[in-house]
Image (cartoon, rainbow, N blue to C red; front, side, top):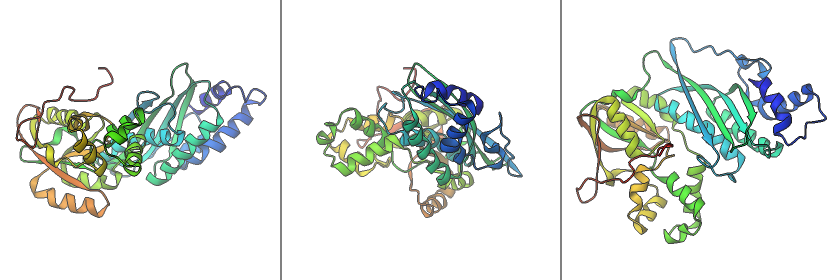
Length: 351
């Protein structure tokens, strides 16, 4: 817990705490970096070994844990504030897809020796901004030193009225398939980070390039429509490993098939320009990871209300296909009416 955090930071912060006693290191690190994030009384100001969370009356707790690793989910030179925000937001995205309201989180860090106080200051600043933005305080955590890349792991928890969590297994034949926001921006953002010359080849100006890179660095979790999804959708999950692969997961869990019109999948202006320049990129946009949008099924009678109320909350929702009887398959139909074939249907850490 936090006591481990304090003891290891004497080594993690490049030896700069060698002349300080444990109490002064503890006071500085907690007060300066993480104390301001622990706003719930149950966190006890981060001075205890554990915290207490009292769930709202009549609610179920929704639990989620996800980690991001340097060189896998973010690049080593990404600003520390964006790393912090991504770490929290990927978990908030899952809570949103379950229809849950955030309650708080636990933070675990594995830091290389070269990570110092400046990096931690930027990291904590970004985390603080999102703690306030999403109303999701810190309850505690753990930090250690690692010889490998940075690892940030967050366990987040939220609440839904009893028995109402939106599940992957809820899709039914006749439902419409919907997604929030736009698909594929993060894949393009990563491509542009790795290959700066790609912007010119894809006809992207500086504004479009920067927007796509920002979408890769910092997802936009759709917590504003969590309640809308919970009330109107029948099944749902967030899109983290690519739309095609995640839709197949939803279909398998629900025991149904899905037919998607690929021309209806919402793309940002930058993504549309990129696909116009290189049509083969469409497959990457549909199968790449890091979208962190909500994918859901909704009864046809509820579709209009869901779209209208989501729009009122500032989130666009697009219907892209339908659910049919089946055994867990998802098909994407191209503009020519022929099913698309993907060489790699989904992102996987183990491929």
